[in-house]
Amino acid sequence: MALQDHLKSRRDRPLLVAAKAVARPDQGTLVSNLEEGEIFLKKEGQAYRLVWTRKEKARGRVLEEGQYTFLGFRARKGEWFLSAAGGRDKIRLKAGETTQLALDLSVKVEFKAQQKRTGAVFLGMGVLGDRGKGVSIYREGKRVRFGYRLAPGGASGSMNYG
Image (cartoon, rainbow, N blue to C red):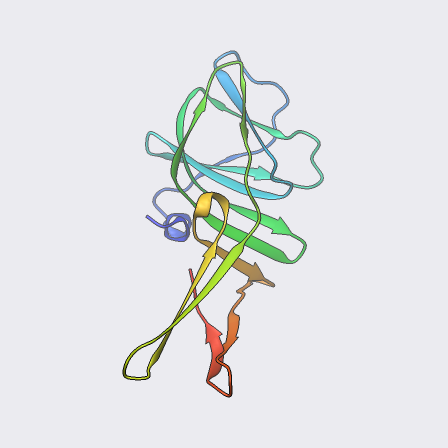
């Protein structure tokens, strides 16, 4: 299930996990380089939404020991949001230990054009982020669209993605 579909569903609301100073002996701590945003995990059918804000000094999020599925993340930078699927990677938290989840917040945009024998031109675009997974970029609550122009004097427009 796509991250956005998962978040919209009413039936599987994620539990909110905010900053907590001290972990119990049966819990592990997840630390991320995410300055502001959310990480989405799932364990045994239960979804978790780990939230980070810029104002917090505590970077760790305390969770029960076990194996979690990384569903994705949303990172905020000013008025920009980056939303990415996790690709079902596994994260193992061990009791009494800290696990680091380093997210690559860079974005790679690839454009492709192919001209067929008929003269028709097919355009393609990929927007990739952390671990080569698809990402969506938002500004002021709207998905950022990418423009194109075929030279010389060719067609132009904008493309959807994600």
